[in-house]
Image (spheres, rainbow, N blue to C red):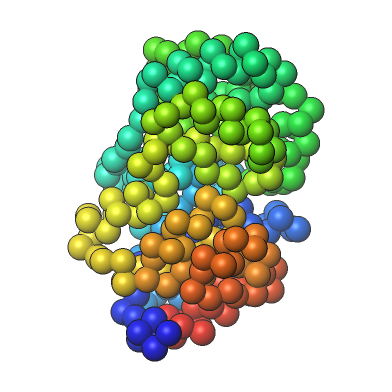
Length: 271
């Protein structure tokens, strides 16, 4: 812990839902906005690190008009900034084909999401999906329906299956040998390449700026944040996070609605 307290933090990576934004108010707390401004004032880089695709960041960015250094999206599959930098890795095309066939034949009533760099669509909108979407409040992007066969002719970077954890998820992943599931919400799981995940995206920016893991800090609350919190020099779980996320963190702060981000940055003398 002494080494952590003495860390020379150059960058902080933030999950969005349940970390930057509240599931209660669906807004960014004032203390979090103040913390972001203070980090910028100290010259510390700030990154969004989310499962959301680039096409679904607009609603979240409107809630926090901040000069972000960059964006890790789709659980690490696409990294970019507002100055022309971009790196991305697509899903295995054979796995995409298997996913489409399996969902059509075995789970025809299940909603699935398909993420390209600038377009996100669903095979269908079910009540299960609609109910989950309402929980995102102001940060919920528009729902678009399109033909899943599109994914066979357009590059797909992430898939989402709207099923609870358990047997259905296991069955889907059994036909996708080059992919892995990352779940941040009990209603669905994201699917990315087997070598993907938020740390893969963080590494892209770390190479760009010449940082090592000891110089980065990360905040998260859900299952898809676990690897990120373990990877970062300082991994902080929100007080409203899941138990497994808290177990993976170096520190558990207060929840998002009670100044969790600001309090942790102060605790580690980053601010």
